[in-house]
Length: 399
Ligand SMILES: *Cc1c(COP(=O)(O)O)cnc(C)c1O
Image (cartoon, rainbow, N blue to C red; front, top):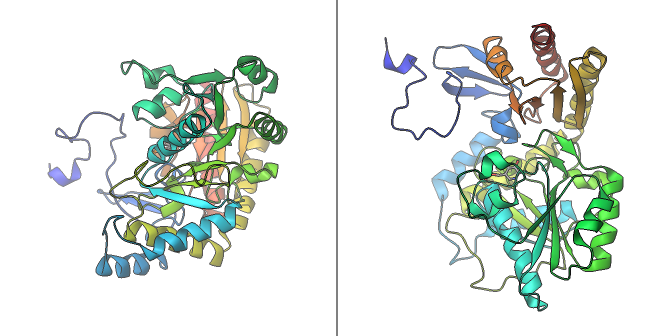
């Protein structure tokens, strides 16, 4: 057999993923192809990363241009596109200052450092941060400690201390868990939990939490790594609640596939770091910044926020109409192009079956089918997603 056609053999790559036996080579729009020439509709977007799909005709020439000029130069110098992208993020978030890094966990690590230093600066020596059940914040030691999934933490203790864990959407529980504790400095949550199973925080909860943060001088830190950057139809998912966070980590969709992370801060957190407090070699490099600038520019030019909301609503309606009465379906939820279908039984097997049928999806939290396609997805493509997926689900539930 031709080795290039055997997509499962990677004996020298560390075994950290349960990979499907598929090797992808290229893509165009919402479609990708594997080494055998089979094509798939992409409803995963590299885990909510490929905002503009694959080989976008406006992004490709911009990145080619940038690669030919400069990829990296390090933060010992001013990088003009950092200021440009920072300004774009500030304008769209209502916040004031940005630190650039390369990944989601790094953005979250920066947020956690901001929260701790915020505490130390006001004399709190053992700052504590409120985090959530089912949260996912990354795989570094600090961010996996903030993560609310024992499977992700197993084997990596001792965990970082200073976290107080509470259930989502339960203000009374949070008040009880923090009552009389002078060391609390921040609350840290995803506006819609991604890996935890597409669990949205309610508008009421986020508004109540904002008031509580103000009353107690806590930083409100919203991890928008997965739900941000237009995915729900607004730039950032918390904007549906009309609130402003103090700290907002971003990554995934920000560079449309080029690794870009950012932590965006409002006035309460913008001046916590001084030179020497934080840094990164790759973060904010010219290629990454160009990818971010062009992603936002193209998103606006092509009206992709409105598209995410319109196409997402259509898809959610189709799922809900077909599945909500089904006894094997617990819930259809999410917003825009961040949708989850929770089944009453584990459904990891569906990822392979969908791929066999020419559709890329993922299953998260064991029993939640997650749909996070490129924001360029058309209504016709969304209909194809539903046409392929719905019969697979009903067959699976009948087994
Ligand atoms: C993916 C994700 C992260 C981690 O991002 P990496 O780039 O994998 O480090 C953190 N928070 C949320 C909400 C995520 O979805």
